[in-house]
Amino acid sequence: MSKRIVVDPITRIEGHLRVEVIVDDNNKVTEAYTSSTLWRGLENILKGRDPRDAGFFIQRICGVCTYSHYKAGIVAVEDALGIEVPLNAKLVRTLMNAALIMHDHPVHFYHLHGLDWVDVVSALSADPAKASKDAFNYTDTPMYTGEDHLKMVQKRVADFVKKGHLGPFANAYWGHPTYKLTPEQNLIAVSHYLKALEVQRTAAQMMAIFGAKQPHPQSLTVGGVTCIMDLQSPARLGDFLFKFKEVAEFINNCYYPDVVMAGGMYAGEPSVNAGLGTANLFTHEEFQVSATEHLFESGVMMAGDVVALVTGKPFKVEDLDESKITEEATRAWYKNDAALHPYDGETDPNYTGLKKAQTVNDKGEEVETNVVKESGKYTWIKAPRYDGQPLQVGPLANIVVNYARGNERVVKVVDQFLKDTGLPIKAVASTLGRTACRMLEAKVVADNALVAFNSLIENLKVDDTTCATYKIDKTKEYKGRYIGNVPRGVLSHWVRIKNGVIENYQCVVPSTWNASPKDANGVRGPYEEALIGLPIADLSQPLEIIRVIHSFDPCIACAVHVMDTKGNEMGSYKIDPSA
Image 1 (cartoon, helix red, strand yellow):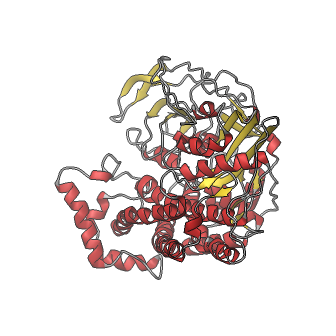
Image 2 (tube, rainbow, N blue to C red):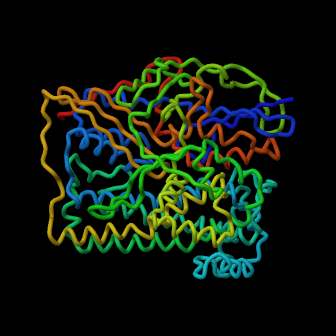
């Protein structure tokens, strides 16, 4: 007899997400529903405002992806107004983007997703001397894995246990049968977990050098950047370079080998060697490193071509046709269900609630709780589609498409990783592959972003321009967009300007693509599709579900915002933009 499991909330993510699955008698997932439980309203807040303020408002979508939305809001307006931004400004934006990626991906692996792979309690029984030697199996230059250092790490974790709790490691499924690392490997990863807490501070400082602060940097403006004095200061440039190299060293000598280690140990685990989900992949050009070159290229690969790539058969990569992008709300809590292009998108709420049903709780007991209405609306996230098809975005899509494009910088890193792990290229089409590709994306940035730094230094010698001039004609109507690749995948902002103010604004964010509900044809989005067929060892400890969802690095706050489900006003605020 089938059973229903509800995981609510999914923790160690940004925002509020619940996942419901139906399992068969063999505890395999046969149906899945992912539901975001808060509403996004920032698009409506922007209506009627000066378009030059869009970036500053829209970066408040999220406390993690602030720079991504900030840049998107600025560039969308620049595109609408036809502004050609100076090269210096473009390169500074790239360096800030590099700081974001190099901060975001290690934090995701160690502090959000890593505990799905690493059994912290197991590390208490490790032999530090053996672990120190084992570290050389994954890199010639291991860091923070000396025997004395590992003994100290082990003591810190043991002290947590002696106090009766595990601190940041509490409330996990320690001892779960799908954990595969040895005690020594777990100890290595825990050491890097703790060090990553320090490294993320350095990465945040990198952003603040050109952005004035982090989160919510302030130095981007329509037309360019305002950090002129920082660009004219050798000390500030040198500080960025020093911090960049420190974070890059951690990525290359800790993050990379830890994923190599996990890749080898989890190669035979069924729950992570499936879970590709939606096999249609989409990425977009990003990281301008010179006047003519970007680090990553654009492309769309549909399922048949992805399968062909990983099986060694002929394949193709399509160029993006922006006119084919739509969002619909058949299963989302909005009024208009129609498939609309983002320029014409609507965000009017229509909450229809949940229903009561029997589910399995964390003790394995059948209990009554609220569940989604399977045939109705069940989430605040819309369903983006490309020519009517769902697309998966994120580092997996970015790395696979660029590998297929023959991008030399990506091919070099991917081939080395496959050699180091002994994994075949088809292993990328999995939950494990999604996690590995996130690390590979961080490594490609760490290995190559200084191309942009050097281009900036050379260009500053002959051109000190940082901002373009422009004007807004209130008698004209404008429309423009930003499309680019950010830490969680393809992000796009779409703006219409009329009478000198924003008439309509729509964000199609990575987690909207990936956390998409079913559409009018009943086709699942990537999260839901990735869960189908997933084996669950213990229904009261559904670690496998969490591991799959975390591999996408959900940022639900980007896709939703706060409302009261009973329609009550939660607060009223009036802002005088001229004050």
